[in-house]
Length: 137
Image (cartoon, rainbow, N blue to C red; front, side, top):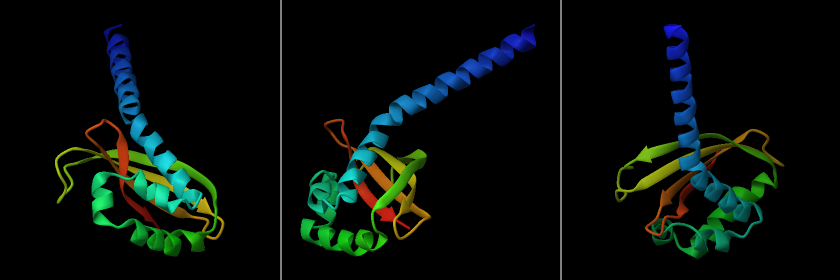
């Protein structure tokens, strides 16, 4: 009986921790998806404008537009995308202290079937998650 109770207790703790992890990280995942929708629509200026302050200080809007055209347009439109992994990044080197989240997506593009996208977000002072970096491989 004690073994069953202990097993049930461990199970409930694991479920609670998993639920808490998902609840805490859902806003950053939603922010990443919404931002990627802008990129998918080739609205690169809006994707730059909605990026984090550090992002905007790192790259100009004009350079971002040129870069995205060079990177994304050859891939064609998105056929499917699903999140693979999401994890916090503790105090990335060279960045201010804060909350950072890295989200990995498996993406199928029209001209590249097996791609991976990485979106790094930062939680800014207003509490919103905004994109800091984007990579596609």
